[in-house]
Figure (cartoon, rainbow, N blue to C red):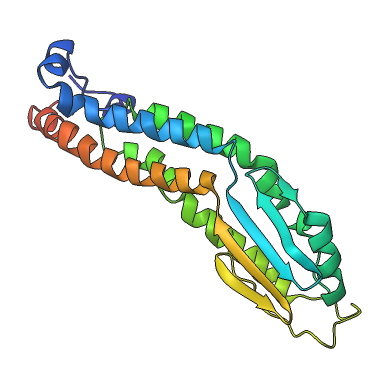
Length: 222
């Protein structure tokens, strides 16, 4: 009996008796996927990135925090300083990303939920975007900072005193008398933890279901 395309994507089903007999084997992938989903949902409410700007006129420094959908902290004060060197407002950076960030994260959670029901290699297509999300977040952040730093307004008051530069997305940087310290937020740490959890989940997923897929293929149910 030929299987439908959907059946081939979803993969072989596992009987309750087999699940009970091999609870660790078949339970590990789903459990790890569940933990990853929880980590992502919690990360929605936590900061993904922090930046501190140190300057002589600000003894306590200026602090900015980035969530997936918003910027908080001393953003106006930092924008005021950046204005003098010709840098655009931080609110103009990653506008689309902040607008869709929460929806993307919810989509990731749904994708991981679906991946738990797919017992073939197609599950990787649902998991991979979530695995690489922290890297994409940092690359996107660095690209925006590079764009802002290399495209200064030539009409700014201090345009002649400051050459275009590339701010750092992580670590210590700065220009002139200003020093910036950029660090990951707890939300990004949780997203990274979810990525590692998913890599382990894919290993257990392959170990649990690949023998069943091969056995099904060998039986001639194509």
